[in-house]
Length: 207
Image (cartoon, rainbow, N blue to C red; front, side, top):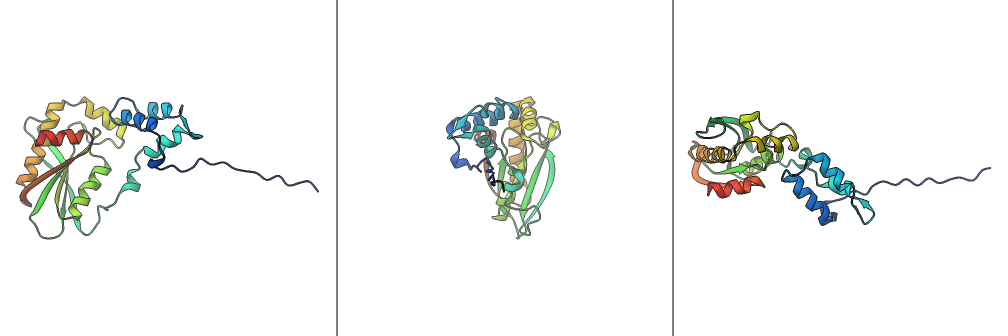
């Protein structure tokens, strides 16, 4: 009777962001800020090996998974969400669209503008707005890409579209969004703002 051969299968380890080397973070930073597209980011990361692990595996751990990251469902009973359009004089098209989320408890509410990164109103930013509403705030997440068709469904194309916009007009769109929210009938008149990536700079502009 022949001897038995045992087969050993190798699988890449599951990586978390705490396991990732600074070289990969630096590449990801360039990718996030639009200096390379997703293909180039993954290609360059794949040339790096850290502690025996392919940089490609590490890089993929950094890419967002919006469905898995959702913390508050749009059907959550604590909130009511819808898209609204409003005037934006001097902005990219004179009109704006935003994701408005309110608590289901009685208002008025303190209000917060949630400004997206350099890629448009993606699912993560909408989730942030829902989180704020669940905590008792009236939240508006403006869609800076509304004049060019809105968030295209992926971050790479979103970055390209946002780059194509006049940045001064885009900032005015954010300012007009803040004014719209502050004057909203459900606003208590107390207004704050939070921004991510490009949106952080936009918040400074609002101030």
